[in-house]
Each structure stands twice: as C-alpha cells, then as structure tokens.
Length: 594
Image (cartoon, rainbow, N blue to C red; front, side, top):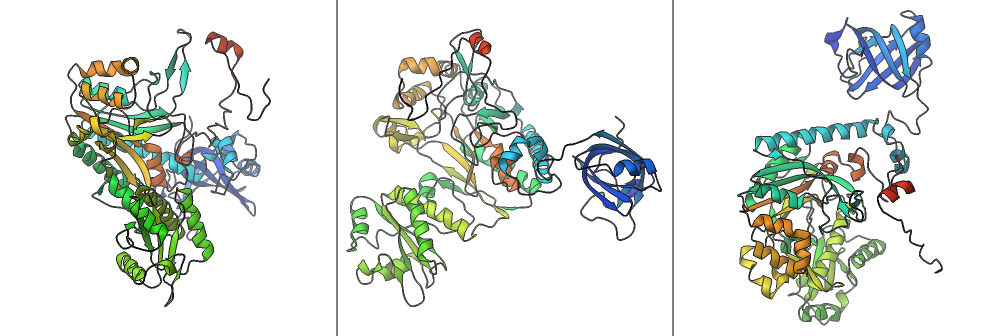
C-alpha cells in the first residue's frame, strides 16, 4: 500500500515531510477557489488543501468529491497559519497540501449523516450498520470495547489465568433460557445446542486441574429481548479452584476498579459494599439496587399496627406489612404525577399507592383522615419527614410491597434526576435464595443454576424447607444494572444429586443430562467457583449507551432480526432434506382450523 501515515498521525514536527494519506471524505468545503477536505480514517482526521496554484489537476478533481468518497492524497505537510489551528483535532496544527489526488472509490449519498451523530432511526442504522459504525460515537465505542478486552486479558494473565476456548456446539441442558438448536447432518434427528454459557465446561476444566480459567466467551440464549439483552452476547467467564467466595469477589473488584479508572472519567466507589439479598429486596425493592441516591424503603408496620384504617391493618394482621418511602421536597407533586406513580406501583403488583403530601402547614393525603389521632405524626417521625416532603406507602405482602415501592423508587430517581450521571456505584448482592417455587409447574427451580452450592449451615434444610436455603451466589451490580453473577459450585456428588431431586429431575433424566459432570466429580474435584460478567452491559456503563445494541458491532434488533443481513431467513429445501428436517409453520392466531 502507498499509505505512509494515518489520518491521526501528523503533528507540527512532521512539517515539510511528504506523505500519502488514504481515507474517506469526512467534509468538503469550497472557499473561493480553494477546496478543503477533512480526510478521515479510524485513527483521526487530517485537513487536506487543494489549490489551483499548487495543482490545477488535483484541485479540479477535488471539486468533484462528495461525502464518503474513498480517496488518496499526496503532498507535503505544512503548518496552518496562526489563528487557523483546530484545537479539537490532534492533527489540528497542520494540513496537507494536495499535489496529487486519486479517487479510489466513489460513494452513493449515505442514507444519514456520517460526519456527526445526528438522531437517526434505529432501523435505518441497523440496516446500514457498516455506515453507522463509521460515525464518531460508534467508532469510539468499538475502539473502547477493544481496549476493554485487551485490559481484561492482560489483567487475567497477570493473575495467573489461562484463556481456554470451549466448544460452541454442545449438549442441550437446562440453563434457565431456551437453547438455540443446531441439527446434525451426520446424526439425523439429533441436535447440538449453542451454549447459554460455558458453565459445565469450565467446571470440568477445574476437575482437569487448570486451576484458573477465563474466556471472553460467546453465549447464546433464545429469550425475549430488551435494551440490555441480545440473542448472542459476550461474557467474561471465570473459574478458580481452591478458593472461597471472598477470593472471587476480591479479584473481580480489583479488575473493575482498574477497568473503570483507566478507561472512564466517572467516579467509582471502592470498596464495593456487600448487601444480602434479603436486605436489598427489603430496602430497595429489587436485587440490583441503584446506590447513587437514597429513597430507601422503610417498614412502618409498628406505627400502624392498631390503626383503624382497614387496608393498613388487614395487611399487617395477615402477615404482610406497610412499607413507605419519603421523597424529600416532593410535596408539590400534582395529582396527575401521583397517579402516574400509582400506576407504576400497580404494574409491579401492588393494589394501590397511599400518599401524604406535607405541603406547608396543611397535609394533602389519600388516607390521613382515616388514621387515629397522632398516627400521622408518628409516621412522619418514623420516616424522619419534614414539611415539603411526600410520603408514599404500600400495604401488602412484605416482598410485594417492597417490589412495588422499588419500582416507584426507580421511577422517582429518573424523574427527579437523583442519580449523578458521572458516578458509578458498584455493589455485590450476596446470599441469594437457592430455590424459587414455580407455581404453574408445582416444583422448585434453582434461582441461579443447579450447580450453585448451598451455604453450609443451610444444608439440613434441603430435606425440610428448600425455600429457606441460601446459596453461595453473588451478583455484581452497578447503577441499577446487573453486570453478572456467579457462585461457589457443588463438588459433592451426593449434594448435586439432591439438588436435582428437589428440582424434580428423575435419576434417568439426571444421568442423560448431567451424567458426564457427576462422573467427573468422582475423580477428585477441587473446591471451585467462578463468575460470568456481561461484557456488553459493562460497555453500556463505560460509554453511557442507552442500549446494548450501541456497543455491539453487528447486533440484532428487538425482534432478534439482523436487518443488515436479513437473518433469520428461509433456507433451501435441499438443505432441510440433508438435515432430515421438515418445517411446520404455525397458523396465525385466530385462523380458522382446517
């Protein structure tokens, strides 16, 4: 190639040197016979000047250039005239005098501006993703993702980890979401699955003596999508032998402190607080708390235990609770604003939202007139409220009340701009319940996955009360996002079989799905544990992206469609025949039966 420098290389010290640059026309300006071209590549932008006094031929050709043409410019580097420097460019003190110009490839007019981050419909952006990735913000996101992955690799190598690749074609086992299945041509009627995670494989690597494993692993889950989900994603997958929970948490905390301090200018907290699951559900209403603001949930049942107000008293007497949050300075909320919060609480499962606005000397309230004398004053004192505050209450089952107020708390954080945008607040959520009850299926299921070890002191409860068993599970949370999670694993085959029994698996099912893992545990399995951190969600935090799609080079849309490639798509019938497959397309809902 003839290129001698990139468009981000040149500085004042290069003045007088003859260079050849190649790239895209970022902007073109014609100033009274002199044409200025901002030439762009991945590394930066350099201004190139075409004057008829320097080269009539190059100048004439420069007048024909349009946005996104690919060109080659040759000429000397010169310093810009005093006062004409561009402080926004690292190359802003120099320019290239265009003596020769070659159009390598012309470009159609792009469907949206490339030179600036204009607001563009996402469907158009994803259809022309190769153009979207040229735009400054998306190009910066890709470069930052690269630096993040390289920093992770260096960190893990320095801490004694081996990067080991695991298979993409694996066995279908229950991991919590639907598998993507791949039919086998050589074994008709049988299927591989794409891995939801390398969970069992990394545990087998511990049995193999690898001791410290990591991988930037590609994972696949056929689940309903949202802003922080994709059918395929990347996770930092980690497993360690001869460790306990603190070892995993300490290592990951060290990594994330280094990661964010080196790659972001945001303020981060350290050390990360470790909050039990029961506490975060009680005080924040969810297991991914945003610690950047208060509005903590308080249990005020003792204040209202004898209240004549039936909706409060009934909840308490039936084993539930009355819970509340104090919103400082929000007594001026309109009835419409309060109604909007009420709908949020109902959407989270509550029957309603009681409120009291301590406005001036008066109190507006949906319930205060039905309280006994002195109860409102005691409630205000219990919550540490002041005039001008808004009190919001939910009476229900204890967890449901917390979840409803948690949804309200999150909405208030956004509405009132309570979370500092330049701050990242990490925490660990620990001591999750090991099991959750599936009402429709009438069985217990693992909250994390079936390989998570119960806390030692809770092992006797496996036989008597599985719902009270706590797991050696932990999640890394930041600013209300779950970045990832992990656990200490079961290595005792008898305990592992017991977990499968509680989940309703038959011995035959266990052998068919997990026999390989149980056999491995009988050959000297070391104590081990690990974690999986979502790289894409981490990149959302680093880049302030609103969607995971802005930090992935070629994402699917919210319907799991690749608009650029047109995937998924029908395949040739001959391919189906070779795979011994037939396609049954379900009738649309409401269609008449034939």
